[in-house]
Length: 334
Image 1 (cartoon, rainbow, N blue to C red):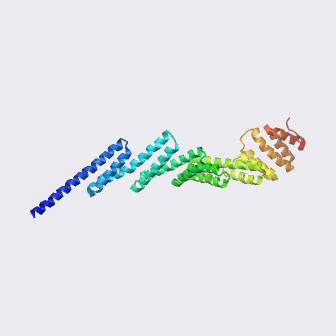
Image 2 (tube, rainbow, N blue to C red; image 1 turned 90 degrees about the vertical axis):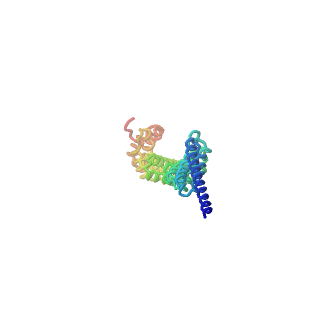
């Protein structure tokens, strides 16, 4: 019995000694990991923290503190590695560096999820949206429009409240599919709605401005090719984005005159004049359309007055011709 007791005692002392050794090894690995992290050798620090976790896991409750401390450090180090890659990109932007940063932040996000570190997960997700947006911009400048749309789609998927990404998506989609007016106008609409929701007044302004400008341009082109009916549809839609547009109302007056809708032309001309802030030369084209409409409605006095006000710049000669030879107006001044 004494021999047996002595045997078990030896085993117990040996196991205690081995456990003490393992605990020391775990602590040593943890301390070495901290030193490596402080020296900014982050990948080696991650490996060493992982080693500390493996050793501590075999110690049960005795190793729980080291295991928990090490597990908390690893996600933060992955995030730091990703941040370093992002700073490297900022110091000398290139698509290759940007892609590296995206991969590392995705890895950081995944580690944050698996470890339960919601702070690392949240920050990684936020940066990923920004990096994909940045990639979309870089590809857009290189006229790689299809690839740019893919990157922007990813930014929007990651952050559905990213107003700038919706706006940029509209610009890229317009380049990629210029005839898909409904498509890129839909992206402008989403940019505006998102900007209002997140209180991004700059994106709201830019999206409204761009949407209005695109519709105004297409409306003017439609008039040039003789499609005034389509022009009116486009121009009326442009007012949804800028209701005080003198240019849109002027073009509506022009299209209405071409369609012999003279009363509409008078109404649109007057609205254009109420919003035009320029001088006589800027207003001349509007007064000319007002004069045409009133001439066709046989409102001689109003037509003469309008053509007289239109007698500036490039509209001076045609207006004076109208007054002298067609309407035979009495001039109020030489």
